Length: 457
Image (cartoon, rainbow, N blue to C red; front, top):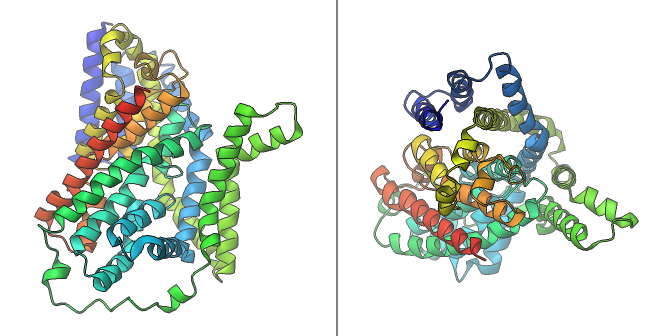
């Protein structure tokens, strides 16, 4: 089978998948699985091997990152229900919020969205945003865009958010999450800087319903409510996030500098594994929930979280199937023949694929997982990562972030987050394109340019 036919078939398959999801509203899991099966048959894979290929691609995802995604989701849900997310935001507001409310709002969003989905994060933070707007007189649009961008940035870059964790697993970086976290924070700095100045600028040009209406349906939240008075301590609130990060950092440092024969070495490596670190973070979150008097809600929180995380896991696993089919069909080997041309694209290749998928079907998580499944593991000589020259942990980390940058570009009408931001922020739909869509475009471009510079180091 000619390489040109392989490439053309793959392109058609991706287009069909995008149309099925965005146009005909087929669930991403069904669309990706269906396209993977049809692609395997059309590309002439042995019929008797196709079920095994699908099974291997599906199960490998759960083996590498399934439990990590579940624990990350549970930690986020507990932080939301216990009031810890609000306490983290309150802590940031007290530190820098009085003089720089937009910056405080953005940093609050960035921190809250590490464990909590950006959609939920915006709903959680919206009362605080309104309160700060009333207290400071800052433009509602400015605060809305600042919060939205802060939430979105960590949503696509920082584990344990499911998207970045899934990308890390597909690219073989699941044991290097601390490196992804550090580099993700570094890449986020210029993105947030651009978003900060954009939010201040656009706030002078666009007004929201909150500013132009005299509605009084929202009570003044400048005074602390009963829930706010009973918020947990700052230490307890940050612990479920900070402790796993510290453990993973310790494990990475010890693995590079420690003595493999020493007793502490094995313990540090054990505690630094993402699953164990997040499990400890989850236990901290459970203790936090119990101390807040809501320990009896753990069962319902777990049940609702698994319902939310379940579809993400299955979509991620379906992406693994697509990646496995692509490898077995020999498409990577064909692209390798043109490695000189492809490698010149380098870090921009995963960005473009993710950006196309994001813009076409709306979901950042689907864009991240699908792109990552196509890229393959950085240590596999038969993967696109190797063809692109992204075959070291450092460059693979940038590959994960490039996929996240693409999945940020852009948020518009087919993205649920677009409607959350515009509806809760009181922004008209046409103004949503001037604010949310343009902001995510600027952030995505800033991110990939930053990543491209870092790839040269």
